[in-house]
Each structure stands twice: as structure tokens, then as C-alpha cells.
Image 1 (cartoon, one colour):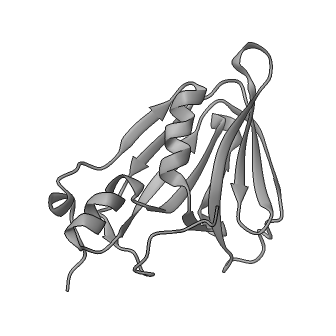
Image 2 (spheres, rainbow, N blue to C red):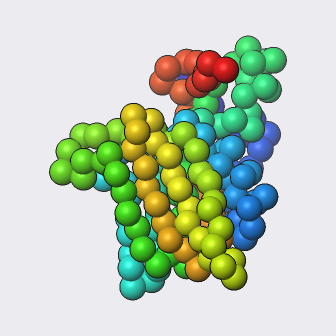
Length: 158
């Protein structure tokens, strides 16, 4: 058995940008339940950029995979935020190089003139807060999809 390909899903890799709250909500939906090692977070203060290399669940393919009886997929993607003034975190032990984090939500808390804070909520009470001049986010798939190791779609009790 081989991993699925873009051709199998008849979809191109995602390459999305967000400049407002509605755009950011689309990215938040597509990155829910993404997992990443603590070592795959990068803060570049000189370039005012914060990035994560995520293994995201392909929510956009979930229904098609279920209908066709094929495996659910994940794909590696870069989630990058520009116009970042500062970064703070809680509940994350950066010295634990084996720590795997799970992204639950991405939200924007507005301030004046388009500025505000982007809150990345993680499983286990972790969080990353980005103080930004404006919403400037991109989500770009950087690998081919692969079979989700769990074989299941993430599920959250309501």
C-alpha cells in the first residue's frame, strides 16, 4: 500500500492567505487538530515573522475520503504569520525537544487600527500569543498528502 497523492484527491496543494478575520477563520478550520513538534516553531523578530511546520489533517478531503472508502490524510504545511511584534507562550516546555503539540484553535483579538493578538490554542492548556500589527497569515502545503497514522478523523465531543 502506498501513500495517497494529490492526483488521487484531484486537488492541488493549499496555498491560502488571510488578511481579515473571515480569512483567518478559514485557515483556523483547516489547521484544527494539526500536530507539530515543539522544534518546528520559528520566531524571526528581525523579519517580524512566526512560522510553524504542521502535520495538518486534510479537513477539505474528509467527506470525499469517507465516501470513497479511502484513508484519511494528513499533509505537512507551513503556517506563517507576518507583521508580528512579539510572541509569548504558556504551557510549552521548549527544552523538551520530543514534545508534540496539537493546535486546537486560531483566534484574533482585535485592538486599534487593525492591530491585535492572534491566539493559537493548543491541547493540554498550552497557548501561543502573537501580537500583530495586522492579520497577515499564510497556509501552504509543502508535501504530498499521506495516510493519517491513526487511520481516523479527529473527533471532538460536543
